[in-house]
Amino acid sequence: MSEIVFDNISRNYKVSIKNSSYLRYLMRREYKVIEAVKGVSFDISHGEAVGMIGPNGAGKSTTMKMMTGILVPSSGQAAVFGKDPFMHRKEICREIGVLFGQKSQLWWDLPAEDTFELLKKIYRIPDKTYEKNIRKYAEVLDTHRFLGQPVRQLSLGQRMRLELMACLLHDPKILFLDEPTLGLDVVVKRQIRDLLQGLKGSTTIILTSHDMKDIDSVCERLIVIDNGLKIVDNDIEEVKRAYGNIERVKIKIKEEDNVKLDFFPETVKTEYKDQSIFCSYNPKEISSADILQQVLGHYNVLDISIMSADIDDIIESIYRSEKDEKYV
Image 1 (cartoon, one colour):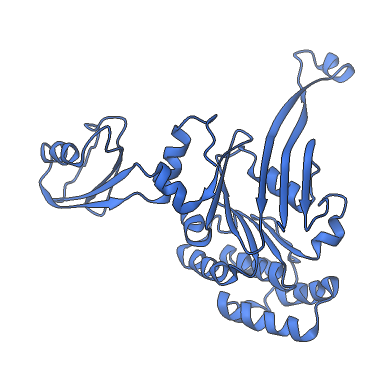
Image 2 (cartoon, helix red, strand yellow):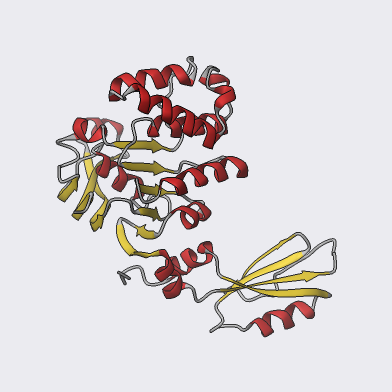
């Protein structure tokens, strides 16, 4: 049985239109309807790790808020644990953990351990379970040394690790994470990814992120939403095979003071760093030999290596493809 079912879900917003006449705007307001989510359907089973991605304003967060019961769909049927998440929100909240970006659930002027004690009472967590989870997650996320500090004194990385701990204390069956690594450094991101990898299989994970390394390292399934529509829903490896027609080449050159890459066609994505030129391209449009030849015409080449496309290149390829064609 699926833990989460979305059947032709849509969500509309009514937004007032400002008129040039302020008095007319106050007396008789006009509205337009914005379709944030348009007929989205999917099933998610227990233990799945699902990445949900898309451009800003695509409808990802709105979709997640409907799954958690924060928003009610305008049309369609949603079910979490077989129940309407909006109508049974209090009951379902006891079985889920939610982390929405930078929105804190920790008391700002209190140490995190005080908030944890409060959450223990709210979720009625048994003493043994609570103590076990505190020890386990504090060790994995390396939070022992600042559990007793007021939250307002902590760095963003320290606070986000404690936010994640707060979500996990009651052993939720489903974990909803909306941009959990936003603004964090590489070390903290790795700690969070390692923790999520350890939860896979036992906890259902729904993750949105603009950092494709989060998605690639944690998730096995990918849902892509664009302009409120689901345009991709499949195993990540299948998505890579379907859209991974991008090659990447790394060309190390003799050190130059001012490296310019404007001689490449617009279809070639380029970057220069660490004395190397990185190119992403479709081999059907241009070959690696052509790429190398163009670089040789401008710079002294020291080394060259062909790399497989990463998840960023694949997502870019999906966005460039026809948005009305669904790959399911």
